[in-house]
Image (cartoon, rainbow, N blue to C red; front, side, top):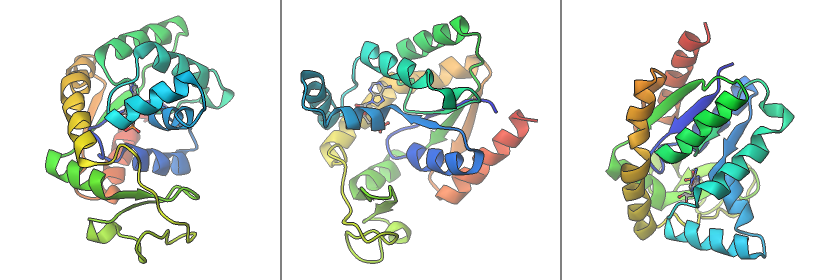
Length: 220
Ligand code: AMP
């Protein structure tokens, strides 16, 4: 199966779509954001620095990210394709990644842009709640995504948590950073002929169906 890179503004659903794809296609999803959130819990100088950058909505430097990615891609489960959720985040990371692929003689696969209007993105971010036990995702501001009981996971009953960077102030920084640093990747990959666009503001089912249709075409 071809590997997939997701490019998306904050809250476009890359985490949700990655999880659905892991379940259906059995390839691993690599979320640099998740790896960084784990590192931010470590009691070390690096952990502390990452924690501060994440809380401010700022990018972690390319060198740290590339090292994290190289380590993860060297694991055996990445042999038959993988999903990149959160990498590359800027053109310099994309160029380093191109070089990595060339050195290991691997194919880039395809790039899927999850398109989302800024106002919807904001609502999704500010209301987002996650279950720390089973990973289920809810939204306290969007009717169809609310948990049945406030702050409680429908699946396992755990108390829901919010990410430290899911607030209005950090959202504005993250969205502006997306426009400035990540959106140029759209042209970068379009010129390589590997970019596919999916409207991500309707529902997660609609987004997943659109992705499946693209995969059927490209994996023929
Ligand atoms: P995400 O879970 O993908 O929204 O990522 C959360 C945060 O982790 C981002 O706002 C960045 O601060 C950081 N991050 C994740 N991936 C990268 C990356 N490839 N380069 C730089 N920073 C990243």
